[in-house]
Structure formats: structure tokens, C-alpha cells
Image (spheres, rainbow, N blue to C red):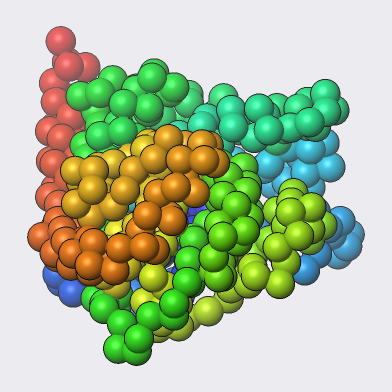
Length: 421
């Protein structure tokens, strides 16, 4: 098959979109398919054999200058005008504007692809692509409605709440598109339920294909660092539960020697940095970001205990990657995390999201029981090897492509007959 894989941003190593794009495209290529990735900035890192077509935006949120105002010479067309005007009025334009740019590119390449795969863009341009005659399939890792609810609940001022409601205004569009695109792939039964509830999608249109774990994630070759706790957060956002972990960690510090490695990039002067300062734990907390997969494996394997304190996850790939590294886990009983780790106590301890005391006690008990940590680590790796393979993801996804292509072909054949009647 000739596959066009669309993603409005594909940050490497961090965040679900870039990781999904890289590994899925690699394995589809290994199965003999032709894959071309269309992406806005930040662009993905892709493996040999996968073609990247850059779909440049104005890159208004790039480091180190987010929410920048572009120079007049950067404005190329009306889509760029819409992008900057939406940003100036506190909205998030990228899904909509990327979808329009992608539709414009694909209109010139009607004979080049057998299927278009939308990786949670859900912009109006996706409907234009379907109208061009392309078979279309969509991945929704989880509905961003959860991010919206948690961020608004965490906002401390009325102005901030209003700003967040405007920022998440693109969700109305995504809901409309989700209900119209047809076949949807998601990564967990939890996400399937939430897409149905929040976007109003017919559950019969949704297929669950769990994510995979890359083979680079494996047991450590060096001894684990005594007292080291590692936590993963793809974004410095309330939904990742870092505040709960920091407060639990501060309590642990009063009784034992521990250190915390946070794999995330904090927002300068943001809530995480302020909380660390207020708790007086700065010298015991280290931020890790911008590292390669091999360096990430070393970090994951260096911990005695890892923690995923999220308030919600559509899948939580870092949880599965930590399990592959035989690192024992304390995780939130939230979203799809229980689906990933399996029965409570076998591969991880599950705690109530947002409960500082319960999290602190669970981590302390894990640190005090090396034999349990060993058993849990082995069980976690065994579960990953049995259930989470990128090759299996690609095979199931290719089968879903075939289904959509066949359905589109049958519909196209039937249309002239219907017109005759």
C-alpha cells in the first residue's frame, strides 16, 4: 500500500505523536508498504525508507520563543493569516491550519496514495481530503477534552479559565470531524469509551490497537542508584500529576535519602518550578530532557522505583517503556494505565490519582522491599514482550487500512447504480 501519514506536529522522543509516527512508519515500511509522512514543526525523526514531506507552519510555539509574532515577510497566504490571528486571540490554530495545508498538498497528488492516515489532526481539511476520494482512517490517542477539564480545574483565576476555554476552542472542530471521518483507531478501551462519550462517536466505528514498545528499551546493564525515583511527563501540565508526586517526594525526604529525576521540560517560572521552590526540594530534584532513546533507557534503568502519577492517560507509553526496562512502578489508577500494567500488584502498584499520602506510602513500601521490586520488574518486562509490539501494531493497522480501502471501493462502485435509479 501507498500510505500518507499525517501529523500536525511530531516532536521526537517526547509526546505521543512523534513516537507513534516514527515507530509505526518504520514497521509499516518493514512490512513492504510505502509510507510518506506529512508533518508540521517540530518534524519527526524517521527511519531509513520513510519519506518526510514537510508542511511548514509559522511555528508560533517553538523553543525558545513560544507565542512569537512572525515577521510580515513570513506570511505566505491566508492560512498563515488565520494561524497568527488565532494565536493572537488566545486560540490554538495548528490542527485546523495544518489540515488545510495538507489538503492543499494532497489535492495535487490524487493518484499517489491508497490511503490517508490522520494522526489526531481532526481538522476540517481532513473532510476535504475524504471528499477528494482518498480512503481515510484516523487515530485518536485520547480526546483532548480531558486535558481541557483538568487544566481549567487547575486554573486559579477567572481570566486564566477564560483563556484556557479559548485555547481549547479547537475541540469543537475535532468533535465534528471525529463524528464524520468514519473508521477511528485508538490505543485502549479507556480511550474508546472516552471518544464515544466526549466526541459522540459511534463505538462501532472505533477499533482498539494498543501501542508498542521499541526493542531499545531493556533491562539495565549497570546497578540501579539507591533511592532514585524516576517520573515521566511528556508535558509540564496539571494532567501529568507532577504536583502530587512532588508533595509526596517532599514527605519522603523527611525520612530517607531519595532523589527524583523528572523526565520533562519545566515551563520557566511555571507551577512546577514554583512548587519545588516552595517545598524546598530543589537540590534533590533533577530535570532531564532532550535526550536520545538510548540515554532515556539508561535513565529508566537507573531508578529503584518509577512513578507515573498522571490524572489521565489515553495509553501511557512511558509506563510500558519503564516496564520493558524492568523498573518497578507506582502508577495512578487513571485512564488506560490499569490496562497497560495489568492486575494491581503484579507489574505495578496502583494508587488513587491526586492522593499525596497514598502515593508517598506506596513509594516508601516499594523502596523498602528489594525482592518485591525484582519480581515486579520481571513481571513488567514479561507483560511488555507478550502484549506490546510495534510490529503487531503495524500489522493490525495495515489490516484496518485494507478494510477502509475495500469499503471505499465498494461505495464508489455502488454510487453510479444509485444515481441510475
